[in-house]
Image (cartoon, rainbow, N blue to C red):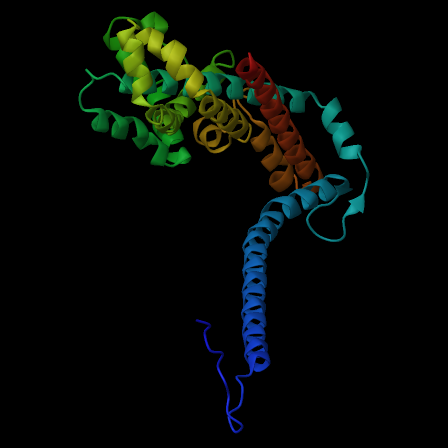
Length: 328
């Protein structure tokens, strides 16, 4: 049987398909517009979240750098208008024997401190992974404690240790019957740089130890277990498994240490104030001397730019050498 089609009376009105469709279209268009507005607001919010830190970075990093470069091209005593002199300040630095002396001192300290801090921190981080080592938390706290101390405090403490008359070091050497080892640790030009590097190395070993231990703890333990099954000893696991897998973290530590030591200042002021002569003076102290003692802000800015250039060159060389080792 055929289904009867619906019939509408003369007074009955057929349902309005057209009006229902228009209402649905309006509702859909409204929802689409709402989503577009929300998406635009989200994009604007994301742009603002990115733009604000970027502008802050420009303000605290790029702007001071630009100001330093500008003043390095001028002769300025801190008052009045700067007088543009071009590259005259840089030419004076290149011809200055004192500048190259303090540069050599700074590069020596950077090399020694990088090898000492990161090298010792790497060894300690390896030892901390040994299962037989007890009281690991205590050892970490003791080694990290000097990091939170002021550099000036560390410098004055070690100045007392190095004192030639009543210092702990010479007293200890005399006590054990080695008076021939007693030295004027901070007054002998031949050993003063080695002496001042010891407190710097001692203070920041804990910082790089924590960074490297964090990298080691991120290595999956399954890799070490498989290596133990294959008969790998602790030394082999450290060299062939741990070291390659923390290579990037090790590279970051070396760059931070080498670049950070280029601006060393507080330790040297407390220990020797750059003496004897300029035997332990750094580039940062040389910059301070020209800027605030001599009032030559243009020359001080030129030295500051030179410190930045040396730090960037060192970081680039480290990145190049360690990146090549990583690719191999």
